[in-house]
Image (cartoon, rainbow, N blue to C red):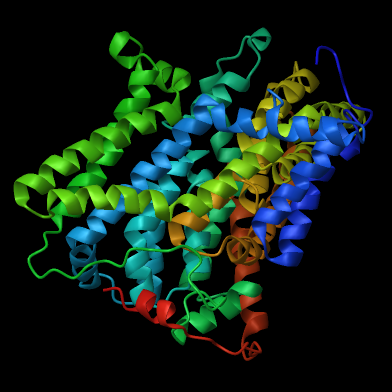
Length: 536
């Protein structure tokens, strides 16, 4: 369309389509129609009300249409990885190795709290990529969390909270590479070194991790999550009354070997990391840091998962863990099981593309620039809030910080300390908004990994994420004021103060909730739920 731009380009209406989709999803508890409506609204805005042009935009526009979302190489790689990973899960379930691992884990995990801590720790181990984290942790931890009657919504929250929040503070990750690329070359700043310096200031990621341990150890649940956890203790893991995604129950085989699960999982981690290094040029002479800076994470995960599936096939055939036809049937079963979350992902990508075509990035850039002159001391907190809103609306954290980091660099060309604080606020807000957004791919894959209804995951997670965001906002006010007045933020003081405040807030929520009973809804324990609670 050349230089065409819609009448609402770079105005607040550019954020209307995702907001329509999010509000409708929360009101109707139905994701597909809400996303389609958001895409339709965005297409009509882009076409200036012309329905014929809107239809073409919705499906065929090369920048944001549905066909474009499906043909994007990165999106295709993610879909292939998701299908291969779910096929691997189906294979491990069918072989009985998942059930054998669950029985072994139960010898060491004795309580509900222990099951949740185990999920957190496993999330820490898989820090290379958030999508990889979500699906891998979910597939391994579901049987264990089900055995101890941890609700699927709670498991989805734990998975989501150890995905992006962990990746954004891990120096060796696809996120570190994305941030490094976002720093403009004109600043003459090493992007990777900048990323390292932001880690102590990434308050939302740190607060989320501290909050995770606090709510588990203090046994605190609030908001909609409290009802889900109360119902789970009575045997209803889903609260909605039915299983959102079809799952292959873990087969019980007395002679199944735990190593038939452990070897594929560790192979998956190893070969995905190697795949990322390969796509970054590590085997052509690049250093590890350079390789992760140049990596194609989605392509690397496809390489890793394809090698793992092949090795698992050979392992299972040699050990006779499955027959040839059973193994091949699991590949088809994995694809069938993943169709629902893939549909949500595709529609979310479609919506994100339409939102970009409406100039959401230009609108946010104008807002930040207009505030920069008079709010210098408060700018880190303001950037944090704007970053949350943008990531929540668009469902993309990488897109958010790629938009905002160049703006922040332009605002603080000479104040290095404030630049680091503000970039960290941008990254933290991007993770927070991504964490809250129903149309974020990480949120969608966390729901899929945990086997939780997507709207249930979104509504139960939101109060927790907003609590951590509120504490982080206060921390950025403190960092901004100290940085502006003294010329150097006192990270060794401000960050621990913020984390201590996070613990105190959870403790106060616990104190307020003591002795109060939540009115529980009638629990409908259907057959699928009872099976989910007794997989092991």
